[in-house]
Image (cartoon, rainbow, N blue to C red; front, side, top):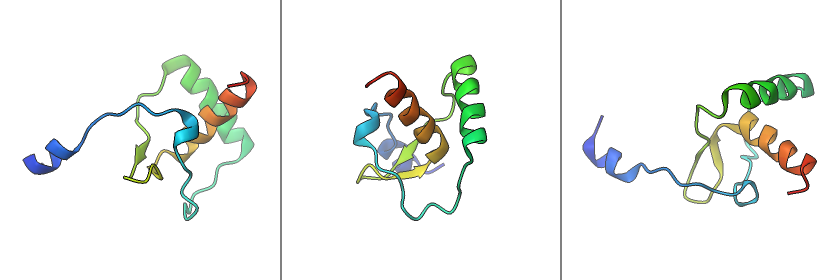
Length: 77
């Protein structure tokens, strides 16, 4: 991997409300899939990060984002 790219990559923690869904995301997830993912996240935690661009728009991880958004809504966050 290009060392310049590695210097640009970083982990930044964001609140759910700071991240925007990609309106052009071709993948959709049923309620059943989201609930299944929610159970997996409770059991194993988030092992794959949500990837965002400079505008906080999701590039990868829309299902995890939706699951966390629902969790926040359930908890009144």
